[in-house]
Length: 148
Ligand code: RB5
Image (cartoon, rainbow, N blue to C red; front, side, top):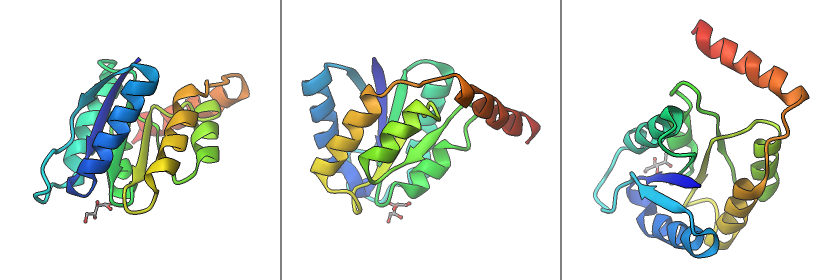
């Protein structure tokens, strides 16, 4: 699996810890689209870059981190084909994969402790989309996107 990661200035060290965790545990390739500087950096830039490479199929999934995970997640969800979940606990991370086939995960460096973030990442990376009745709803979401 190839993963794109992005972050703002609030989450530089946190992003590095998450990258290292995923690489060590899963051996996945991670491409860093976020900032590595603590100078002010506007989160929509990273949200857009990561969402675009997920949407185009260049990578399989995206992970986004800002202070709350909210702004960067909203930015990602503006890109066609993106289903980004902003998450602060593992249950929603898992169900968002199984029911919503989320392709981007966001969380907040100021909200979620690093060990809890690793649990969220584990659930999100390992849970599979279940399809079936859920596909009808995802198709409805795609229709909303097409109409707007
Ligand atoms: C930056 O101060 C902060 O607004 C950002 O990291 C994020 O929390 C926005 O949603």
